[in-house]
Picture (cartoon, rainbow, N blue to C red):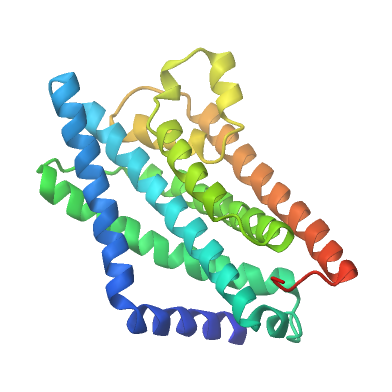
Length: 254
């Protein structure tokens, strides 16, 4: 608990010290949504009703993923450059616990940012979405999946050191994936799409928000499977990479 508290306060001081940079990133996210919204209006004759609900839900969850992954990647790279990462690996807690603390703090902060972005977007579009209580389940499972993705990003950085371009490409490809209504496809296609991180949670949330009929059992099972799958993948990749970099003495950036 002490290490988690320390990580939280470290992140808060970074936000306070570099508030202009973080605020600019947040404004950029809002501007990107407005650009997507206006583009849909010009091309499709207006993004309204349930289609706007789907757009908002997909974009907000992408914001959560983007903030978590970007923050984790940027923090890891900076700590490698400054030599702080080697010091952290000498701490009396395990590396897995260390990066779990980082993931938890990043997810909490990203979730707060996502909620703020959602409120601002609804204010700007004057389109207010009613959220049923059942949305708590897919949202929490999405956070579990994001934790697995955090471990996966840490593993890639520990091994390849510099993956900034890869993360940037991944973020915008995944934005397109999250905005596609996979729930309208066949059962076989939906099962395949459930392998993509957070996809079943996004579909579940869109259906619930738009008050469309859906199979609760299917989406609950698919979301649980997705969360456990990506958490296991992230943990396995981290353990393998952590063992290899320690064995090879390749923890440092250079």
